[in-house]
Structure formats: structure tokens, C-alpha cells
Length: 374
Image (tube, rainbow, N blue to C red):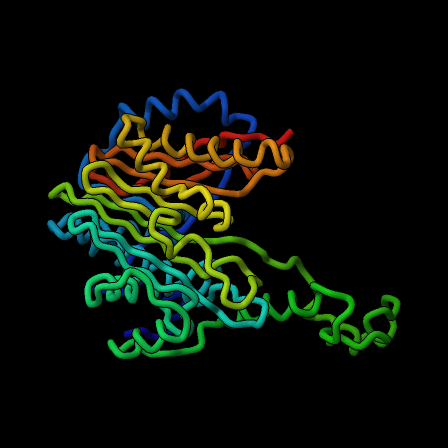
């Protein structure tokens, strides 16, 4: 069910594959001044239906939207569209935040989490800490549709996937493996990973070739991120669906599970209202039931943009009395049944972006940063 894909080949994956990826930009200082305008645009400038969005806005996210939209444009279901979209990201070998090529845990093992929810049937499925399967979103769908459970975890999730024909394979790419090896050798001066001490501390220019070889993996910045993909859609029949999929926090403790596979935390869908998804530090999202909170705020009449901003304020407020200088790195995306959408985060790295595909075409939407440190 899965296949090895080069960077060139993965974009051509068709039936059964499709969706999401994220990029950030702009200046944080513009966030508050732009908030009202973006809120009005999100409320009164609805994109129309059908609609599909993803938290990713890079090339892969754009391709995910094209493939997901191909399903919606032909009258297909939101559920099929979000699965297709998520799969596009999951098989991208250059994306280190989900699926194949995702960054591993502290043992060098890639453990993936994913959830899917179908608003039409009020059904959901998830897998957590699954290993060796490139497309966990599709396995989550099988949990939803072929069992009466919501979540299967660990080795049992891998065996479950294999029973349906998925192929277990190494999820490390040369890039993700080199990033891991650099992290392992640099994260502590007290272990035995890395070049021997007499070469590690040698002055520049001494034992030139030996030092260069021994230190090669120690050069450059170590990537460390929370990376996740959300894909949300409303189809032509007004049904809503969503997927959240991730490789989780890089270098996490073995067996750690974040918010992504937890319904109500990393994903929530209500067919009468809309859907929301989360990326960022999963522990904060779990404790706040953030996606459920966003959907309930929309049920109370808030636009998707307002509801995402409400969730940001709610989480920041929880920490205010404990550590007022702590700014958790969450990002939320949401859609409603009217074709409105929104996106917000804490404001650490400019303004958040997401990809949107609607009858108006393919676009990148820039959301708001609701909190500025200091």
C-alpha cells in the first residue's frame, strides 16, 4: 500500500494519496493591527463550497490542495479529500514533520500519530506511536471504518496496518537520518557519541582530514520542531471531515503521544458546525482540548478566525499566573460549514499561513499572531 518515492515522484501519486504542509512569514508587529481586517475578511469573505484547507503552505501543501480538490470538484466526499491531502504530505521525503522522513524519537525510531474524523457519521479513528507505515492517516481511517474502536497504538497499530496490506518499511530518509545523527552527537558532552575527545577539542587546522571527517555530522544547526499537518474540508453535500497527522516532537521520549491522534485535542469535527485542527506543542493542546474548544466557539457564533484566536488567548491565560513569560508554540486552523476559515498562532515567528482551495481557486491565507512576548 505504500511505496518508495523520490522528491520528483511523490507529487505524482494519485488515487489514495493527497494533502497539507505549512510555512510562516511576515512581521509579528503587524499582527494586532491587522486582526480586525482579517477577522472581517474571514467572516464576510467566505470562500464558498466545497472547501479544503491545510495548515501547510509550501509546495507540498499546494499540491495536496490540488489533489484533494480534484476529489471535491467531482462531487467526492470530504472524507476522501482530507485523506488524499494528508497522504501527499505523509509520503513527501523532504517533509520532516510527518510520515516518511519525519524526525525520530530519542532512540532514532520514527513513531507517527494520526487521527481522522467524519462529521457525516460522527465517527473517528486514530493510531498512535505507529512505526514503519508511511501513511498513518489511512490506517486511522481503517480503525474508524473497520473496527468499533477509536484508537490503536504502538506495535499493535503496525500489525493492524499490515493485516490490511500496508508494507512495513524504514521511514528514515538520508536527510532525516543525518539530522538525527547530528543531534545524537551534539545534544550532550557527557556521552560517548561523537568524535573522540582528542579530535573534538583539537585546534582548527590540526589533523585536518581526521578532524573534518570526525566532525562532519556535528556541523550545522540541529532541526527541532513540533511539525504536524491538518487537512479540513467541507464537500458539496455540506459534510465536514478532517485529518491531523504527525511524526510528533523530534527527539521525544520513546512512546510519547501528542495531541494529533486525540479527538478533541489535535482534531475535532462537528457536521453541524465545522472543524478545527492543531499543530504545536501537543501537551498544551491536550490539556486545553483546543480543537473541541474552537468548534464549540464556532457553534456559539464565532467565526473560524475568531475561534482560533479565542483558543490562543485561552491557553496563554492558563499559563499567565504560572509563568507570564512562557509562550507555548501552538497554531490552530478552522473552517465552518459556510465556507469561512481562519488561522492563528502565538506570534513567535511572524504570521501563520495556510493553503486554501475553494471555487475561487488555490490561495495562501495569512492568519493572525495573537500574543507577542514581552
